[in-house]
Amino acid sequence: MLLDQAILEVLRNHSSKTKTRDTKPLNVTEITNYLIQDFPDEHRARPITPKRVRRALNNIINSELSKEDKDKSICYTAYERNGEEYKTNYWTPRSISDVELKYLIDSVLYSKIFDSETAQDLAGRIQQMSGKNLYRMTSYAVGSLFGRQRLTIDVDVLENIQLIMDATERDAFISFNWNVYDVVGKKIGLKKIDSYTVKPIQIILGDGRYFMLARYQNKDKIYTFSVDLMSEITINNEIQDEVKAENLKRDFNRARYSLQHPYNMGGNPEHFKLRVKRDYLSRVVDMFSYEIEIIPNSITETTVDIKVRASQEGMKRLLLFHYDAVEILEPGDKFEEQLLEAVNALCEKYLKK
Image (cartoon, rainbow, N blue to C red; front, top):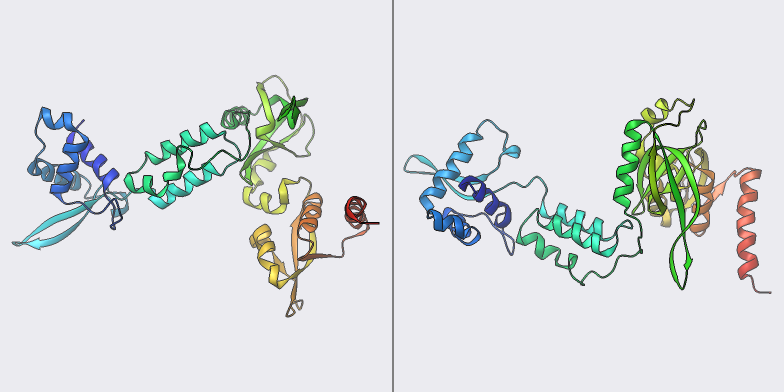
């Protein structure tokens, strides 16, 4: 390994702009000691000395003088000594900070698309992108400290994603088996219930799972499929249809779709007026974010009326889930019947006679 590469590796693993329990800005002597420790074969082949290290550091710094600070490989502290600039306390500005890498690791571990072995393997590889500080911050990511994944996944979701993306690039249909979780033998597992052929449009992430939006041949209605319930995916380049979906792809807004389809329930978004208890407004903001419009002159000490866009099925589930915080205004006869049907079903199950 070239000395320049070894120095960058040492700074990546052991340095940081601010001092932590395991890392800090490093002076030349400290960098030299780490090089000898981490690359003993290189040191035996040709002794690594502070003089060589300082020369290599200066070469790297001088080669990047035209770059902006955020793009440089090495940062340092400088002061004047004997009329010249003296550099010390070196660190590397990582493009992704340790706390950002911790977020990536936590996202992997709390996702619902990996089995336990795959999640821990990926978390471990993310840990390798940094040094001791990240290992300390995420010591739970390997071994048994974190525990098992929440779901038992029998499908390689990322492999499915790759196949779906390949089909999308080719503007092709895919065929696959559609499964549901059921009792298989004496355990819960995937059970095939049907096979479908559809044309993928988009892949979105919701509640830790990937969902595919797709349509059937010669149909423009959009259906949602959980990618972790799909198996035996094959790409079919032979199927043709007459639907032009360019506008849908061009105008599709991934973030807005998630807001307008609570719980990933499909259907065309409609306007709904809601009365929300202000003590619970945070729940609704969490669901609809910037899509919320306050209705003028509706604010009271305890409630506020808002307007949002959502699919009917998504709105129905939201109202049932947040029955103590949200009330729908002007639901319309058809939607009111759907709510009454759901409420009556609950009453039949739980209302004591």
